[in-house]
Amino acid sequence: MFDTIAPRYDLVNRVMTLRMDVGWRRTTVARLDLPVGSVVPDLACGTGDFCRELQRSGYRPIGLDLSFGMLGAARTSAPLVHADILRLPTPDGTADGITCGFALRNLIDLQPFFVELARAVRPGGRIALLEVAEPPNRVLRWGHGIYFGRIVPRIGALLSDGDAYRYLPRSVAYLPTADRMLALLDDVGFVRARRDLLSGGIAQLLTASRA
Image 1 (tube, one colour):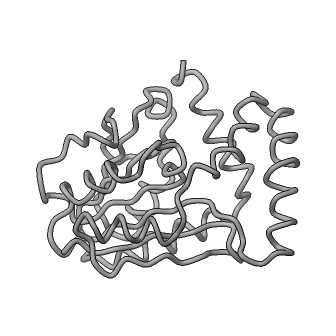
Image 2 (cartoon, one colour):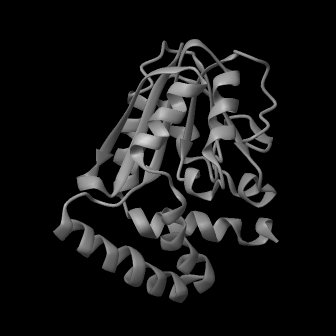
């Protein structure tokens, strides 16, 4: 079933972020700060937006997604692999870096995911995880809540499956606090973990280096 609705979830993200996601992806890839030619799997790659940005920056991306529908709709020349991001088909310590965009909120528990990242990334490698967030400013949070919780689902219902768009704002509530996510990264073997808010706090970027 997910394969048939997966492209709609990608459209949800596009409507939600409009064109800001282009800048967010570029910031995410820039924060990897890895040598040109580094191998960087992009997890939950969707239609390949991150893969294209990684290639543009001189990296060698590999797109991984659990959905055949997403992989079939991908617009990238990077290798694509059908895989569960909790069980990566990657030998220990062989990825130079890993990116992931807008998938954390779909995981019930982030700890196993972070453990898998630590297993796959080589010492000194980097991760950059982009996700939505709620602005800390009360006024911005109020406006964001109206747009994200009411307007986006209505627009989405006109364009596609309304249920998919109603799911999106609810899914943000599944994310742990920032302090908890940083502590989890530290616990599994990452160092210099940090969280940066983007665009006034409507998106967040988690970065860390493998010890």
